[in-house]
Image (cartoon, rainbow, N blue to C red; front, side, top):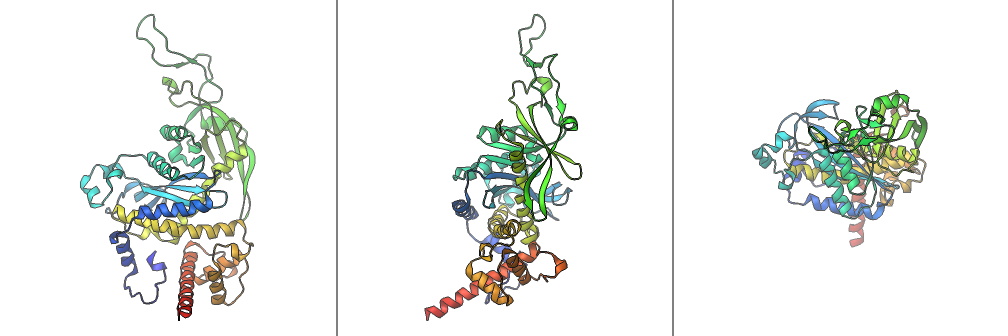
Length: 435
């Protein structure tokens, strides 16, 4: 990240990366206070009862063993088991915009059982508990909602949705959910009938419900999908046209633990089956109201994409993976800084996606930044698309027809250079008017 930031005039730093490491690891400032203020600022502008909380995790591949929480585990960034850190994040997707809320490191058992290692990494006492990723996500949700942030639906991928306690935790908080599950999970396509425990006339008394002989039998999601008709659903307009897929929206009854009566009496839920363009199927459980439509469920399920954009901004744009964060304090400080900065990149690219021909004034840049951008490149800039291309040009993008739009890293460099130029103009004006 430091290598991509133009240094202010007069700041003589031989090693910007080392300077950033020292700022993150040694400077005395409260990253939690920064995040609270950030969330309050964003909520004042964007909070909406129709917003969705999206839960996901991200991984940071590492070479060594000293970075806090690093261990050989499944690394989503590489698509295989590898040495990495893993962090759970919560994102807020509101009708007008989306932004990251919070992130916390997941500590594997190998770390939790080594007190000296935790001490060296300065892991706070309240985070030395053995928590699943789902439990961490629930705590992050409680923190955000405890600050008054509205929203009644949670969306998460299969890594969280397969956990019954996680789904129960959401429902117990009065939240609706659409969460991914695997095709190995079982459900009842029709309401099952159970035989209640009763006193035995001989032998051991029965203490569990059992499935009645004439009851419908449980079926795996894979088998159910084989016979479930799916309809074409378009959920939004993308940069290259309508985005659509084929979906089934079914009423089912939970079947996990049916052989021991664990799901006896469970209320019905909804099952969303998605058939992707390559024929691959994905599944999600939901406790949305019974009258919830298929299109609403699909739009909620597909609202996860902003999190992927945030992770691209965090890693590709800001170079988060390159930071050697050996202690918890450094990691949390980096998240506080990068979360705020990444949002501006996300907001600009979202405006480009949603309305590229909108006036440049709707790009999110202030009037001075637009003025500096126009003068620096020596040409008029009238639309959001032209703002993105101009900012990319400052970052080294050639703007040739075959180049396409600027990528995360190029856009980040250009935005930082633009910010530096604008601050220089502001300082010059202040000095001139102060004479």
